[in-house]
Length: 124
Image (cartoon, rainbow, N blue to C red; front, side, top):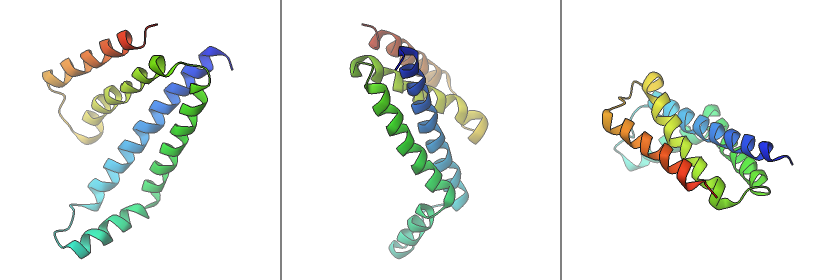
């Protein structure tokens, strides 16, 4: 495997993970709030688990684990793992337009720290 392929697999891992998170959030928002009655909570969760969109999220998460395993055949864990923190950056930046979530100055500062941490943490 060429080295750039390992990095492409990490990017794919990040995209699949983000997809899964967004689909779960989207479908949970559509399903409404968690019911108060314990017996209805279980029905609510089973209905979500059987939701075709939620199933695609689990498939994406599984596929992400496969891309990670493939990338690990070529990269050191201590080099590659910090890059997965980009999922936090992508989720925050895309949650604003997709779900109307606020991006506050503190969140932006946190994202900047994450990006700097990824750069520093993945060196050597």
